[in-house]
Length: 387
Image (cartoon, rainbow, N blue to C red; front, side, top):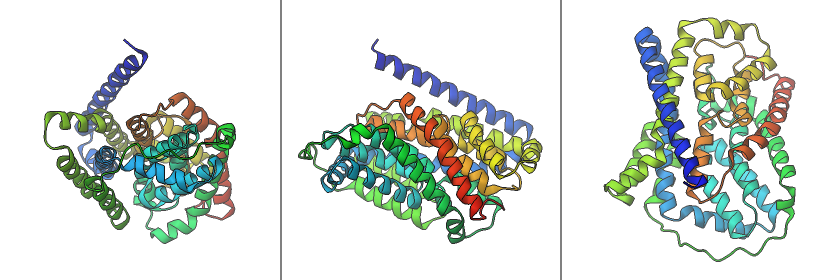
């Protein structure tokens, strides 16, 4: 068995283990506290349904060659490695802000990989920027990160008010993270690149493009676009790939159902725990803003940011915005931090890239504390860290 086959087998086993653990946790939560489990499930299901729809749309877009075409266009517009990187940073920040980080990672990772590859440059800076900047830059609007929506259930605030409070912290987190990635990969960014190669694949302007545009409109226009986006994904796969056994197998492989089910079960179980036990709420009531952010960041590493948000926001919060800084930037500390890491891995592999979890986690471990501290400093100085 090759190393890649062994890695794939190990990953599959871990996925099924996570799925089984989540189902057991969900069953225990329902049995012990059915009302709490019902409330937690109602709070937690939209992120997972939305992610499933985005993965299906990403599959169809890949089959249509949209990612390759987008990457080649970006490469032609950029004059050099640094310019390409700067353009990628802006693109990631804007798409994350408007469409949420899961959309950004699912759609942009292959685009950026193809952009670097078409110029003959190393793909590592753009590959790792696509995940680290998406996590770090998801504080700007409520819909930028679905943890925002979970936490803001206790805070009645318009999108404009949220933007005015959190945008400065978001910008500084993106800048710090981008500088760390650029410093680590400065040699690749400054290397002379070849002129963009001619397209190896012609994009098919059909189902994939329509699905991407539809998902974009739905995510921007609706507060909860989960079910509509999932429906678009299912219809796109059916229209593009058909209903054959091979098509169904491909869709199931891309979805990674065991991971989604496992994380959902754990999130509901922890949300139920937070409703039945006052411990997390009591702890948060004794912490200041900086300690709240640090606790949230650590919790994302231990249980993933969606389950952590479900647990920590099960009751009213003393410092919700500091909590969000930790929940959104903290996932860069390690690959267990957010579902976006799973999306990133699958999208990168779809584009035939060779992502390294060790390298990505190393960059995140270096950038996340700096970005979190910078974001909290800005939030505190602007008076936005309080309730």
